Image (cartoon, rainbow, N blue to C red; front, side, top):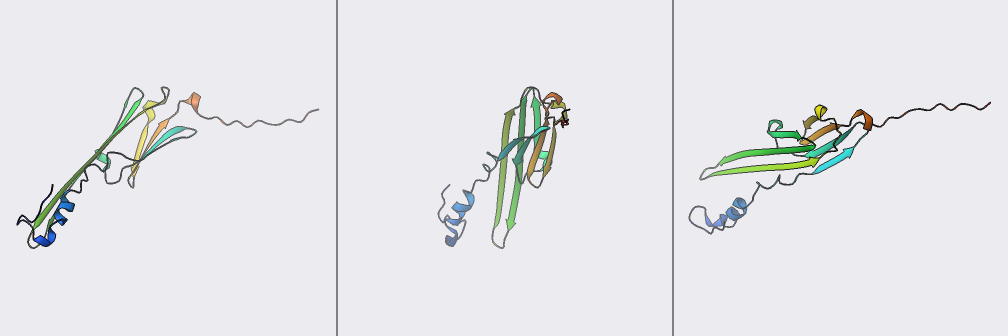
Length: 140
């Protein structure tokens, strides 16, 4: 959208309105940062999704496919002496991961704090790392 002094805004703002209205925030969540770690008891999926409310995050497990999606909607209105500026932004992300077939899908847990979503996918008992101490005996 290109706009030059159309009478809507004073000429000293020409160019500024183009910068302002072309700032597309609707793409800011299209790619979210993800870390996946294998720990002894589970797999941990960490996602950076700041600005999204907990109730706008949806997680589903279909077979061994873990799908995570979220959306953020925001509307701002600035009223100044001679003008009103309204700005709407919308962001969405969708990520899917194929999990190992033998994970414990019934006990997946998710936690959201300070813009970071943590999803714990437990391993089955047979896959959990077992540490066993072995006693060393002395020979006769």
